[in-house]
Image (cartoon, helix red, strand yellow):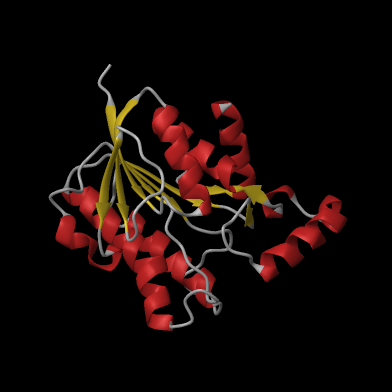
Length: 219
């Protein structure tokens, strides 16, 4: 069987770092092309690192080749208060990556969106995720998956007060919360993303509870 080449965006984030580790361990993958704005702390013979300006991803079209694109890019209003930059990251990078994937005939494109994504939402975060989903799907890549997790938790490098309060709330009242709104681990999302490359799913938009189901198949 032919070994696969993966493209990974967002390798330094919570979910992306888990996915990078899984790809390194997966014998089906011979190369992991990591496009990142800052140098990785992880080194491995499989990793082909490209330290680039992610807001100008189209400048690297010739290097953007492989079998699957994993997009784990995302920011927060606290980290990126500038609305134009916020849009350029949360919407612009995934959509540009999808266009490059289509241009370079990459058959798999898997991106992290969010539960409640809606281009008509009055909430900026949900609106941008909805617009991103719409324009990624418009590329008509054969195997496109939009993962829509609820609150993503795990051991982050930075503290997020809002996330800590939400975790406390869910811990106390989790029994009242429907399955799709429960917290989800970054590692669980990474496992589901990798699983989707080997076992296609009929749904293109995959909510949080379904992500967990797919991840269990990986285990």
